Structure formats: structure tokens, C-alpha cells
Image (cartoon, rainbow, N blue to C red):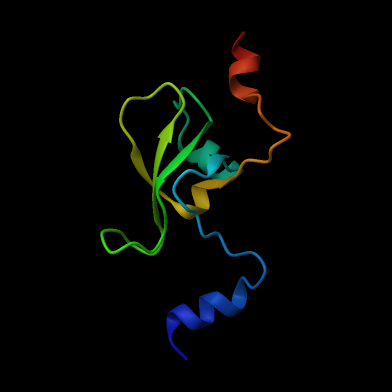
Length: 93
């Protein structure tokens, strides 16, 4: 069994495959590692597993930023349709 197959079996049902256009937010791990983030929500520009990126890298453009950034996929999680407000921005207001 290869490392990818092992990783796939560990997270069955919890795969974090991000596609371009998916709304995301920082996970708890992402928030702890990226303390100066202006916004905690954004959109996937380039997902996981493309030819130009690692299986674990995701290009994300956060709300209010001009340029996308590369993050590990464990730093982000999908944003539910119900959660349209940004918790961090609401606290700052």
C-alpha cells in the first residue's frame, strides 16, 4: 500500500478535496498558525491535486485580499451556506 492509499483509507468520508470556487474558512489549526489574518473566510482559487501543486496545497484568496496564498489543506475547512458572516470581523466591529 502506498502512502496515498493509507492516507485515503484513514480519512474515508472526511476527504478534503477542495475545488476552485469553493467557499472556505480557516480551521482552528489555521487560526492558531495564522494570527494576523485580516479575514478568516475566502474562496479556493486552485484546489488540491493539480499538476502545479502538491496534494496538500490549496491556493486561497481571502476576502479583502488582492493575491491568493498557498496553504496546507488542514488549515482550511469548507464554509457552510449558513455561516456567511465572518466571526473575526464581527468581533472587531
